[in-house]
Length: 91
Image 1 (cartoon, rainbow, N blue to C red):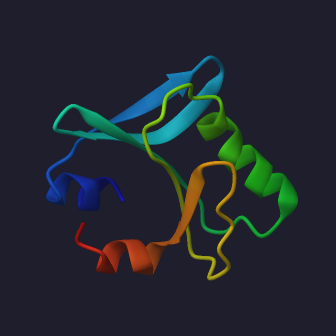
Image 2: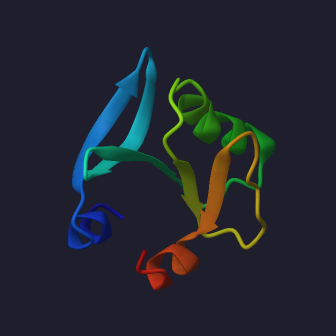
């Protein structure tokens, strides 16, 4: 993910919101995208852990959860994407 975001022209950092860590903050044209990355979030406890840090961010910029799961778990403004779908989308 890190290398792919760099390849797409983003400046990439790790973020922290209170005691919650965001895996990647990718910024291009002064607009951030927030990413959490996990192998799978099919277990409810894992899903809750991964989205908690994104849900604590108080702005309207995109928040994205990337996993290998094929099930769309988008919820409450947090977009869920399969890793392969993300990699194939050049946007």
